[in-house]
Image 1 (tube, rainbow, N blue to C red):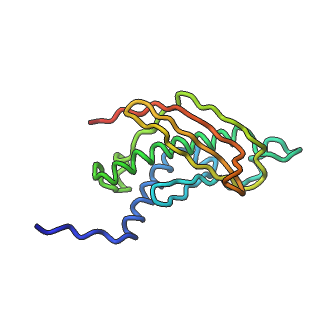
Image 2: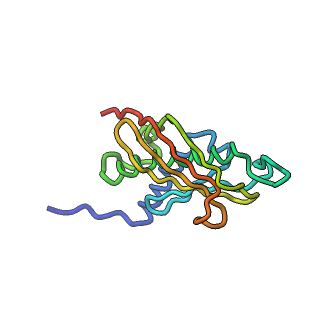
Image 3: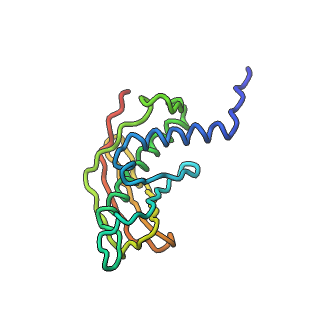
Amino acid sequence: MSRKTPEPVQVVKQRRDEMLKSLVENIPYINYMCISFDRRGDELTAILPFRENLIGNPMLPALHGGVTSGLLEVTAIVGLAWSSLWQDMESGAIEANPADTSALPRMPKTIDFTIDYLRSGLPRDAYARAIVTRAGRRYASVRTEAWQDNRSRPFAQAHGHFLMPQRDD
C-alpha cells in the first residue's frame, strides 16, 4: 500500500489563504469597511485600518460606536464560519478549492449580540479576534474582543449567539 505524497506546506497555506479570501469577499460590508483578516494557522485576526470617516466624535476624537460594533460582529461571523470551514478542510469533508464557492459555508445568522464599550477607540488601526465558545449544529456562541495598540487592553468586547445554517447532508 503506497501513501499519497503530502503537498508542500506553501501550497497548503496558499490554498487556505485563497479559501479565506473567497469567504471574506462574499460579504459586501467587509469590503465597504476595508476590513481584512490575517490568518495564522486556524486563528484569524481582523484588521480595521484607520480612516477619518470612521470617527464618530471629532471632539475626542473617537471611533464611531457603530464601526466598533460592526468590526466585532463581522469578526464573530467570519471567525465562526472559518472555524466550521477549517474543521471540514482538516477532516477531508471538503476539498479546499477556492474556485469552488459551493464549498463555502453559508453564514450564521445573528440571534443577539451584546457589546461592552470599555473605552474610546482611538484614531488608529483596530484589531479584533473571535473565540468560538460553543458551536453546535443549530446554535453557536462567540466571544470577540477589539484592541488597538495593546492586546491586553481591549477597547470593546462582545458576546454573540448565532443560528447555524443547516447543512445539506
